[in-house]
Image (cartoon, rainbow, N blue to C red; front, side):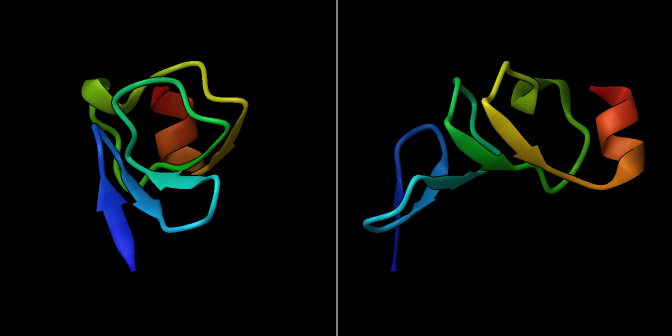
Length: 52
C-alpha cells in the first residue's frame, strides 16, 4: 500500500518515489527538475543521476 504527500511513499517505510521535498530514501524514476532535492540516499539510473 502507498500514501501520497508530495511523494509516493510505501506505508510503514522510509522509501519514497519522486519526492518533491527532501526524503531520507528516494527512488527517482525520471529526470525532472521537480524531483531534484538533497535526498539522503537516491536510487536512480546513471543518466538521471547525471542530470541531477
